[in-house]
Image (cartoon, rainbow, N blue to C red; front, side):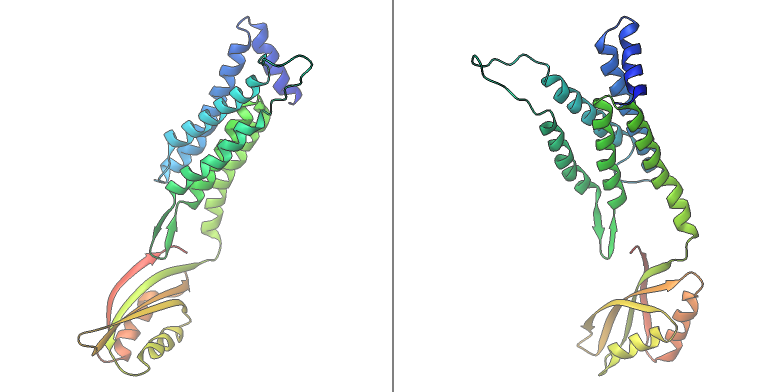
Length: 246
């Protein structure tokens, strides 16, 4: 503990409510920290939002409080025997178990995987809760501020960085030998990077539907690429276009 942490605990003892108010402050700090991080996730419409983060943080703090209190209990033991209690064992279980909850926040849809940041945020608020439960007020507050900075400030910075956009382009064209490589060549001619392809023969094998995962920069015009593809090959059709996340 830092001097500030000890000062807060001492103040709680001095106002006459004893240790109970100190433990209550730890739970309230955990609720505040989890709520702040959860609010950021809630605003962005993520799977785990305000209430989930608050409950994880409060639960972690409660587990840490119980773990710490266990060491102060008088355990029955034989004469001249030494009983050693490890208060960190329950905390280990929290950090392991939170992985199952984080796994529920991760959703895979085709090439897109969503929820990794939310799962990481859940894991972080569990750590903040453990620190709060141990009475590390300063560390909990600083950690919460850093987590919010990563989620909010870096998200704004990411949007200003040059990055590639991703789309899943599905096209249909008459089947002929080499048509798959021809399609890829026509797409890459415009400076678009092909990240992956799949195809399926249709209409009694006379046509083929090709799905191409492409990446391009913000400065490139996807509309120009699509129009030139339609004009370059007879029978060429764009079936669907879907924006995806890498």
